[in-house]
Amino acid sequence: MRRSGAASSAIMASGTLVSRVLGFVKAVLITVAVGSVTTVADVFELANTLPNLIYVLVAGGIFNAVLVPQIIKASRNAEDQGADYISRLLTLAVLALLGVAAVVVVLAGPIIRLMGTDWDDGMLALGTTFALFTFPQLFFYGLYTVVGQVLNAKGAFGAYMWAPVLNNVVAIAGLLVFVQQFGAYQQDPHTLENWTAGKTLWLAGTATLGVVLQALILFLPLRRLGLGLRPRFGWRGIGLSTAARLGGWTLATGVIANLAFLVLTKVAAIPTGYRPEHLAMDPPQQIAGVTALNQASMLYSLPHGVIGLSIATVLFNRMAAAATEGDRAGMVASLSSSLRITGVATVFAAVALIVYAGPLGMLFSGGVPSAGAVVGQVVAVIAIGAPFMSTSFMLGRAFYAQEDARTPFLVQIGVAVFTVACAAGIWAFVAPEHMIFAVAGCYAAQNVLSTLLYHRVLVRRVGDYDVARVLDSHARILAAALLAGAAGAVVLHLLGGYDPAGFAWGSQLTAVVVLAVGGTAMGAVYLVALRLCRVEELGSLLRPVLARLGR
Picture (cartoon, rainbow, N blue to C red):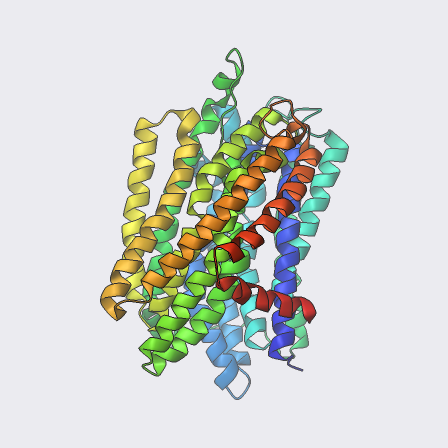
C-alpha cells in the first residue's frame, strides 16, 4: 500500500533528521575515543573516508546517471512491474561492485601510500590495516544505493532514509565499547606505538559493520514488495547504452568534481606526516589534519543539508514546470524566492559558525583545549563559503530544470581546474601547519567561484533573474546576522570564550552549554534584527517548518 505524499515526506524527513543528529554524535564520540588533532584520528579518517570517495568517483555517477533512472522507468512501465529488468540491473550492479571493491581492497596498500603523502612507515602500516577493514564498504555503499532506489521507485521511501540511522547506531555502540575497553584519548592517549589489533577491530570493524547493515537491512522491505527478484544475466538490448548517453553530462560532471576533490584530500593528508616533529617542539605545536578539516566541513555544510536541499527540491519542481511551459517569469520568480529564503538561514549560520568557532572546536577536540582552538580556526575559515554552497547549488538547478546538463559540466570543469591549481599551490608554497587552513579556504572559494560562473551564464541565458532584489535581501539579512553575531560575541565573552582558562574551554560538556546558551541568545536577537531590517522572507522560511511541526 502506497503512502500519501505528505506521509512519505514526513517519514523521509524524520529519518534524515535522526540520522544527522546521530552522525553528529558519532563524530563527537570519535574525538573522545582517538582525539581530533592526532595522528591516529587522521589515519583512520582518511581510511574511512576513501571508500565513499572512491565509490562516488568510480560507480556513484554511473548509478545515479544511468542505473537509477532505468530502474524508475522499468518500475513504472513494465507489465511485471519491472521485476525482470530490475533483476538484471541488480545482478549487473552487484557484479560490477564486487569487481571494483575487490580491486580496491587488493590495492589498499598502494592507495594509502598514494594518498598519505609524507607519512612515515608506521602511519602507512596503520593506514593500510584500517583500509583492509574499511575499503569493503565501497561494495555496500553501492548496494545500499541501488536497492534503495528500487524501493523509492516502488513508493517505499522510509527504509532508504532510515537505514543510515542503523549505521550510526552500530558505529556509536562500537565507539562506546572502544572507550570502555581502551579508555578515552584525553585520559589514555592512543598512539601508533600503543595501538593494538583490538582497537582496530572496535574502531574500523564496527564502522564497516554499520555500513554493511545499512545496505542489508533494505532487503527486508525489498522482499515485502513481492517482485520475486533473483539473479538474471543477459544485458544486451535493455537500453543501458542509451541511458548512458543521456546521463553522460551528469556522469562526467560528478567524475570531474570528485577527481578534483580527491586531489585536495591528498594535499589535506600531508600535515599528518609532519605532526610528530611539531609535537616535539618546545612548546608542542598542534597541527590540523584531515580529521579537523572533515569536522569543519560537516559543520559548514549542515545549513545547506538541512535548509538548502529542502528548498531546492521544491524549487526544482517549480522551475522545471515553468521551463516546460515556457514561463520565464515563473521560473525567475521561483529562483529568486528560493535564493532569498535560503539566505535567511545560511547567512546566519555562517556568522554563527564564525562567532562560536571556538566552542564548536572544543566540542570536537576530544577534550583538549589546544586541539579545540585549532579545529575552531578551521571552522572559522571554511564557514565563509556556507551561504555560497546553497546559492551555487540552486543556480545549477536552474539549468537542470531547462534540461541543460552541459552547462553545469562546463562550470564544474572551471571549478575543478581552480581546485587542482589551489591544491598544487598549497602543496608547493604553504607550510604544513597552515595547509588545512588553506584547503578550508579553497573549499569556501570553490563555492564563491561556482556561484559567479553560474550567475554569468544564467544572465546570458534568461537575462535578469531579479538579481537586485536578491542582493538587497541578502544585504538586509547580513546586517541582521551581524547584529546577532555581535550579541553572540558578548555572550561568548561572558562565558569565558575569549579566555583560554574560561568556562567555554573547560571540557566538551561546557562547550555544549556555551553553544546552547549562546546559540539561543543569538537566535533570539536575529529574529528581532530581521524584523528591524524588514526582511520579508522570514515568514516564508518559517511557514513550512511550523506546518511540519504541526503535523
